[in-house]
Amino acid sequence: MPERATWASKAGFVLASAGAAVGLGAIWKFPWLAGSNGGAVFVIPYVILSLTLGFVFLTAEITLGYMGRGSIVTTMRKLGGSKWVPAGYLGVVTGLLVLSFYSVIGGWTIAYLVDAILGRGLVTSQAELGARFGALSGDPLLAVGYQALFLTLTAGVVALKVSKGIERLSRILMPALFILMLILIVRGLTLPGASEGLSYLFAWKPEAFTWQSLYQALGFTFFSLCVGCGCMMTYGSYLPQGSRILKSCAQIVGLTTAASILGALMVMPAVFAFHLDPAAGPGLTFVTMPVIFAQLPFGGLFAVAFFACLTFAALTSSVSMLELDTAFLVDEFHVSRTTGAIISTLVIMVIGFFCALSFGPLADTKFLGKNVFDWCDFLTSNISLPIGGLIVALLAGLVVWPKFREALSVPPAPSDQWFRIFRLLLVVACPILVVIVLVTGLL
Image 1 (cartoon, one colour):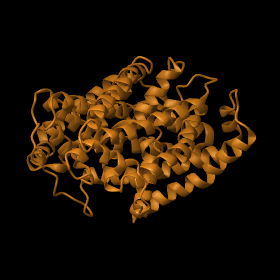
Image 2 (tube, helix red, strand yellow; image 1 turned 60 degrees about the vertical axis):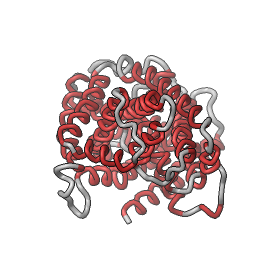
Image 3 (tube, rainbow, N blue to C red; image 1 turned 90 degrees about the vertical axis):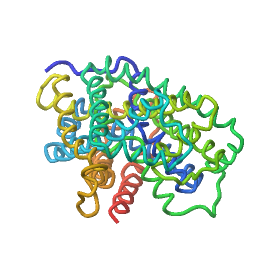
Image 4 (cartoon, helix red, strand yellow; image 1 turned 120 degrees about the vertical axis):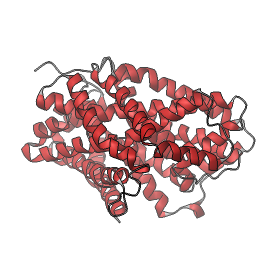
């Protein structure tokens, strides 16, 4: 078997992992969750949870990958024995299902970027924009075509060596993403009335607090860091021996949290400046934001920058999910990276085809009130990802704890007290978080 690939640099690993975690969540999902859940009463708990329990979850998954030196199935077998292998296969299936519906949204981002480049879509009527979004998502040729283009781009990156594909892409797209976000934020903050958006996001108002907002913050903390399916475990397996994992994980969590806050700053001040509804929900990105661009000087340029951000974020995340399944085929069946990427992509395209048609020809084909897209989202977000996170916490905190602690003890090693607190969070607080997300998601 050939020697396992490694990241060319620590910065490459951090940027690739942050890119996997950021994804569409920071720019598409976080702003509308913040808008729909009271602003600061969602944002502040999210930041606290990300820097504590989120950090613990992420560190656990990356460290297990570092210890196992293989895909999620290989790592589960090596560290836990044959009885843990089914948990690895759960992660592989989760990766397939997530990318099957995620690639539909990724295709939409490319479509909107193309429209922005061509100068289309900048209208002030939300009704017209809603109709355009419906036409895109409901047209089989457009939906499937853009989805296939998105998956092809993803596969092209994954087929290359880790250092030449994923790492090189992340080194280019992640800095570009942050630069574009900062440009849009500066422009948004100069708009009259933008301060109301800042107040909404960061001014704590106890009367606005609800348990629903706290639950949403819990859920987004868990999913925004891309833990539970094995993506981060796979990335961790490419770390060279002697890596300072704790420092890298802290940087990843910091970048991911910052990206979410920047995503909200990119959207909310402009929404309030134009007196639009911050609680517009998932359509905030595709229906509300173009209305804002249509009313800005040089709005076309800002629209291109915004949808370029979305596309970059979608690609960096989709690459990590495809890498999860490609690494499984490479490690377990000893195929080449190119072959593994092609096989994984073809399987995802088959499932994703039905997800893409869920807003068109298959919109009325439902089981228990959900179409194929909804089921892929529900099964992964509400069931398999929380279960995967619980498995990671128990494997790291109970089964392999002595070796796990040793892997984190690269000088300067944390104190014994630090490790006691970390383990308490890992085997008590993190499982409680997972159970809350799991049970609430099933109700």
